[in-house]
Image 1 (tube, rainbow, N blue to C red):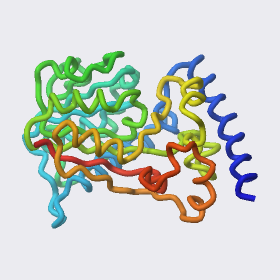
Image 2 (image 1 turned 60 degrees about the horizontal axis):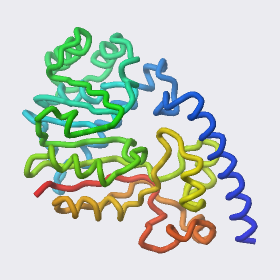
Image 3 (image 1 turned 90 degrees about the vertical axis):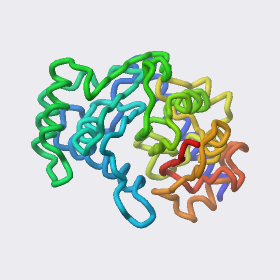
Image 4 (image 1 turned 120 degrees about the horizontal axis):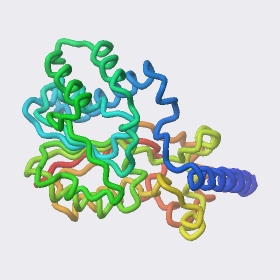
Amino acid sequence: MTSLRNGFHYALGLAALAAASLRHRIGGYTRPTDFSPDDWPTAVTHVHEIVEDWRRHLAGQDGQPYGLTGLDILELGPGATLGTGVLLVGLGARSYRAIDAFALAKRTPSEFYWVLTQTVQGPELDQARLRDAVDGLVSGRSDPITYVVDPSFDIVHGAAGRSFDLILSSAAFEHFDDIERVLGQVSEVARSGAIFLAGIDFQTHTRGVRGRDPNSIYRFSPGLYRSLSFPGQPNRQRPADYLRILEKFGWADAEIRPVDVADPGYIAWSTSGLDANFQSSSADMHVLTGFVRAVKR
């Protein structure tokens, strides 16, 4: 029964993967979220939730907020807007630089950022700083927010000689083709004591499959998966891969903080249907989403 169930989901997942490959190869990588970029209320909520998630995982063990005042922040793969940068500056960051391989945020109209500043309120947000950040974006000023688009995703080049106290990412690392190269370059621009914090979605991104078989993308051999590659295809790196690479590049206290975990019943029947590289307990296939956090030595 288990083998039949896995066989069915293998076929279903393969069809979804082939369709996604064809769609992205024809249309390119244009939509990093599952909602329309014109849906501003949802986009504002999305940006606010990302920043709050970061702040929650930056907080100390005693629950004390992590102060952003005066920090230079780098975000990797910001996606459709630079709204996170606006909020981080409003929370006290001295500067925010975003680097992406795709110019997705350039399509966002300036009105969105004014809506963001009017919608997201709170005593911790410096309204003058918020307005200055948006004014800089609208006028094309590179201070305090800088947006760098580099198809080669060269982080050292994109940093332009600057270094950072905080390196952030949200649902982007799973799309990077070579996370060892990315983390190596991140290590070059991180100051001693800098914190790396990345929210990562380890599961399949295909909406029709995700709910019933979140580990669908791990069913296929490396050769088959590569043959159906497309821009933004999940890289299938697991939590242990991130921790190993961070350790290699001199980061301390590297940890994975699971957020969404798979039901034990699902893991029990689905694991035998995965490619051999993902069947061992060290692959942590129960971790569907989570945060990777580390401190630069």
